[in-house]
Length: 192
Image (cartoon, rainbow, N blue to C red; front, side, top):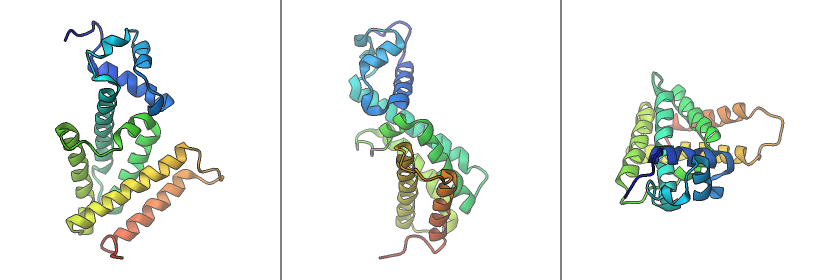
């Protein structure tokens, strides 16, 4: 396939990410991306496999960016400090990039090796952060799901305007993270 002059896949994904972060992933169209880049819509197909392919590329971008944020947040920290830093980094990422984040929340397709690898690396970073808690593998995965659910749920409510009371949301999130960490201090997720 011939490539469009002046743009590449990275620019297409970056333009789509900017639009999705501004207006939401569901509102994103290829026509908007083409207009943003100043190219004709058909030329986008030289770089991405339609809207589905573009969303996959945005999901990969989101996973990579989130990996970088949580990795950076955890450096030089351990235990509670590391978990709180990771949780706060996750929240900041979602608030800064809601459209890209939305593209990245689904589990990757089993045959998408690139997405699987980035997802596995995120899990490995989180397993390392959880190591001081002495959790077995299964309990650690449950703990990772818990942390992800806390960050996702809180930011979803936050972005939707779900916190109307005049209380500091940063403080609310910090208290939520501390409660989560306190639960891990009891050797992980209690059996029900």
